[in-house]
Amino acid sequence: MIDDAQLLALLEAESSFSAIRAQGAGGQNVNKVSSAVHLRFDIGASSLPDPIKQRLLALSDQRITEGGVVVIKAQAHRSQDMNRADALQRLAQMVQDVAQPPKARRPTRPTLASKRRRLEGKSQRAQIKAGRGKISDD
Image (cartoon, rainbow, N blue to C red; front, side, top):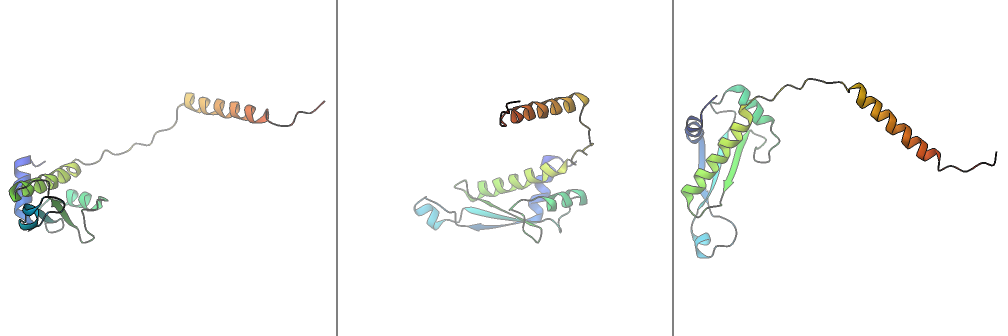
């Protein structure tokens, strides 16, 4: 397991950043300054361990392209450095989430009591429905 400082340094070294103009309201600042950041991280070309790469590629996340590149846009802050750090932190969180292997599911069987409760519920419902029929004069 990689600690946070090493992971951030590794991800920063293998990521490419490009500055773009942020969207939304902001007046002159947002129209003139490229403070938003696009972070691009190629999963296949990275030096992450293979199991982590495979779990990252298996994620159904819209930030991962078909080519296996993570694209994160950060524009929450007014400064480019803070947006860059935010994008890097979000990428590190994504990697940390898949770093822990998923717990293997062991198949279980329903208990005897739950089977009985299910069958009792079915028979009660059947009696209710049977009572809705036409009444015969026998």
